Length: 482
Image 1 (spheres, helix red, strand yellow):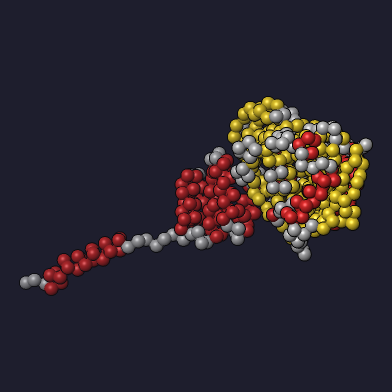
Image 2 (cartoon, helix red, strand yellow):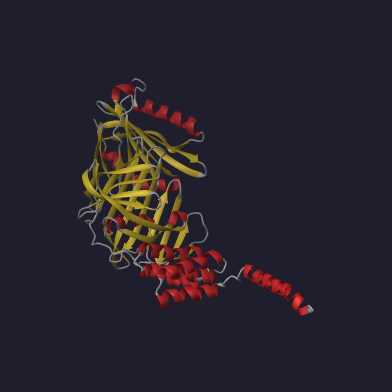
């Protein structure tokens, strides 16, 4: 006789087997971030299987990215593993990812920053006191666009020696001009103070100290303060800094630069990608090709001077045209086409050297700061006399043209006056106008020589005009026209 339990046993076993298979088919509960970290740390520190540890840490990043502390620790430990494997680039990238991706995990960010390289080792200064590098800026099609001047000199600040890093830039195509001035520590090269004025971007000044910078922008009521992580430098001392880096093929560095006009701190990475020979107007140089991760490239001479031979930035190309050493308070003799003039200390000149169809050329005068637009234009006297029979006639026609162009021109109290330039009679016109919200004041001087006609133009903000008059008069009194 069949026993009921016996008869039903196969069914019970089948149901049990199906139940067990169901258990096997169910997914295992996902490991928590803590469990994965524990497993990875064991593989890393006890077993020494670094590749396996990296795999598990990456699992933490993929599955627990919302847990900032756990993910930051995993990212940091990936860096440690790569460090131990001798993969310095990957280690640096992992530590940087902690800083960039997990700013709220402050302890891990702090440890990651501790793994970053300190201030780059700097070479002894390669320049002499008052060294100047003059560069011409061109567009990719070869069109001359302007000039860049770098100058560095010894100075004193609050009783201690410092370096003064000065830069002038003028773009003749749009009338833009800029001037920056940075004081840096004589030994560490850390920035102390910075000033930057730009005719399009505005004006700013900054004071550095105690791992912070206080930036004051023109037109803003209050300065802003930014905390800084060493190493850091001012954007406007970068050219001089590049000259002091221990460059070699494959050299890499990363540090922060502060762009005070933008009120921003920018992480800057750079690498020497190759050594190549570059020929510019100043000569032929073997150079380190220094690629910046902001899409700029500098060529630094591979010699004891470390000149900035060339740079490419923002769609423009700058090439070294002249190297010189200027003495403090030294005037400069400028000889142009059909004229000669002496520039006061701190003034520079840029002339593309290309005459127009009528033989006229223009020389832009660059003042000590970016507050003045000055220019000397010369041409064959015969060509000018075809249109204007005297300097006064030339000046009056120019005044009429300005009036139509500006729409709000007003003669100053001096009006039109006769002056002397050497033994020659000249005509000076002084007037005011508004450019947007800015009140401007300008002076134009026309003079005829034996074979050359010239006009000088000085334009600046009205409030600055009187301060610059002595420089204007010094330039005019030194002018000789052929």
